[in-house]
Image (tube, rainbow over all chains, first blue to last red; front, side, top):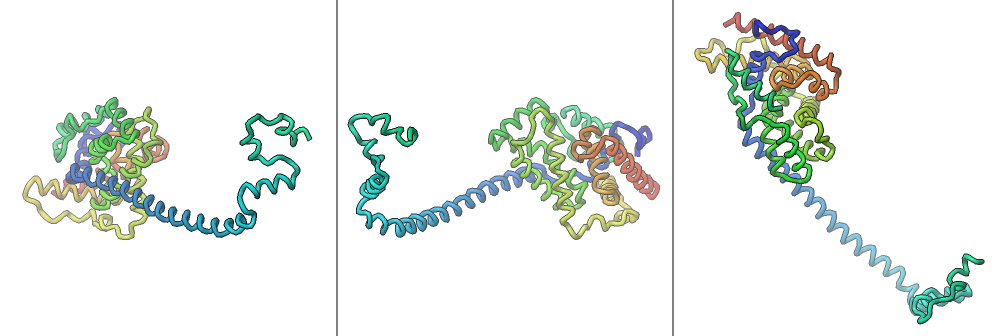
Length: 120
Length: 211
């Protein structure tokens, strides 16, 4: 291609390079860049669409889960009368103060009462 | 990088064959410090900075993809895929290293993947021994014929060999950079460039004799 260059040259061959460059030269680079950026924008939009679709399904799933929990837990609570009564009954069965009484008392609890389980 | 592209501009003026249809001007030159700033801005989500990088590397990415795929439309699709992949991988890019070889590696992989998936390879079906369209009266037609000849010649080479010669002689990357891009040793790059040049020069010498 170029008389001054051999295939062994460690330097680029300008004439071969220019000929190949002309042979491979693409068309309008500006239009290409615009289409790449449009694809980027579309990819971002579609990512949000996927998230939105999952968000909708998530809300439906959460509503169904809440309904199921309500259906299962509702009869149990109504049998105990109220939540506090259920907790107090559980504490009496253990022979200790219910946790709610520790939190709502005017005076701080005795350390012995708090750490009874550890001391024992 | 600016030296590389400035050098390409010089090469075009030195050559007596086909002038570069889009010689890289001062605006197209990719300055290292400017580039690292652009890349860091793109990494932090600045889409405009990414757009500038796309504009700067678009022609190079498309040429490299075309060297692998032959078909310009396929090449543009592969180059687009590569830019999108680069955007998603930008957080993994090391700003201490030059951006061009990192991007060209992604481009080369995208083009090679697309080539594997492709079943019909139109360009490779071209017969490089055929003169392109008979006698051509003017310089533009001569250049078109040479372009066809070269593309057909490239199609005869292995994809790795095509990439090596295009990255070296067209894009001005060093053997070491091409080794990084292709994931092969330096010595293999030299060998690939050597064989590719030999084949292309043979084709072009035949073409000259036919003229």
